[in-house]
Structures are given as C-alpha cells and as structure tokens.
Image 1 (cartoon, rainbow, N blue to C red):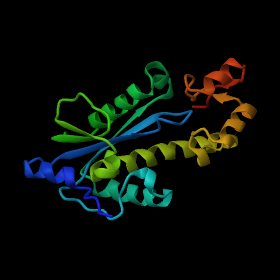
Image 2 (cartoon, rainbow, N blue to C red):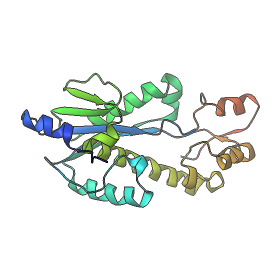
Image 3 (cartoon, one colour):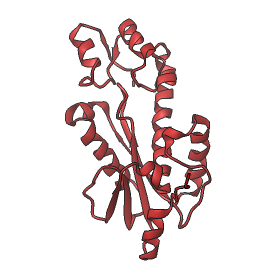
Image 4 (cartoon, rainbow, N blue to C red):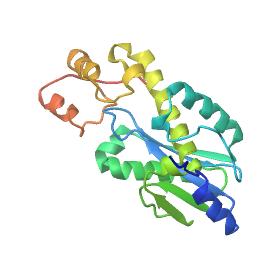
Length: 213
C-alpha cells in the first residue's frame, strides 16, 4: 500500500511562499453531553512526527504522548470550546463551525492559510477544505489530537465529580452502560437536551440534575 504524504498539502503551500499554515479540526459531535471542542495548530515548516495521524486511529496512550510533544513543538495552538447549551440552540453542525472559528481566533499568531477537516469556513485568510483531512494532512492530524485530548481531559474531570456515570470510560458517547446510568441516576444539566435519547428521557420524566460548578 502506498504511504500517504501527510505534508502534501503543506508542501504545495510552501512552494507558494506560504509558511504559517494552520490545521483545524473538531471532536465531540456524537457524545450526549459536554461541549464540542476544536483545535487549530500551526506546525514548524516541514515538521515531521512519525506515526502522527487522525486521533481516532491512535491509542489513548499515543494521543497523550503526541499531545505533549505538539504542545512543545507547535508554533501556535488555539482551542475553541462550544457548550452543550449552544449546541442545543444552533445544532451540532453550526456549533462545530463555531468551535473551529473560535480555535482559529484563539491562535496567538495569525495563519497565512488554514487547512480544514471537511467543512468550509468563512474567514479572512485563504482556506482549503479537505475531506478526511485528519488522515491526509499532518497539520489537521495535530489539531485532531489536541482537540481530542483536551475534550477527554474535560470528561475525566467530570468523571471525578460523577463517577457513577462512567465518563472516564465512554467520554459521553451513548454506550449501553452510559444509557443504563442515565436511567438510574438521571440526566445532568450539561447534557445535550436536543439529542436522542436524552430528549426522549426528558419527556418520559427522567430527573434533570443541576451540575456542580
């Protein structure tokens, strides 16, 4: 199988004299609770990091290792976090866009070009939207790792407060154990109320518990 050059898109831009290239990606569309999180990363020119790929294809141990390396090596990192309340207001697609825009805005330096995983964004710098970008661009793969580890860490903090829900294991995704915990312990106020089966559980009278801040 031919190996993919994860710097293909970046190299094409380097040839045009563009060096500050950001990759942006988001995680957390599918979970029943918590925010959607995006990250935007600018890597040094021709940066290499063996084995770095889409965060979904990496073990948690690997993701955490790459996260620490990227925090040290990246020229700039921005993170965008959009709450479950906002997701309920505008839908997850729009909230994912907002998270990406916030991540780009939160970069400490302005990029000259942004590589985006899949969706188009209207911003004041040129962009390239790449389907499956997290598997095709090193910059987007780096962003996916930063976003995933950031969101997972939020779920681990939630797990400390509410261990009965098992957030440390399922990270908010609708596993069988998670759904059973919802029936047993009620719905926390940081759930996405427009998501099924949460909306159905609310209609059936399952208790909503105000989350501790």
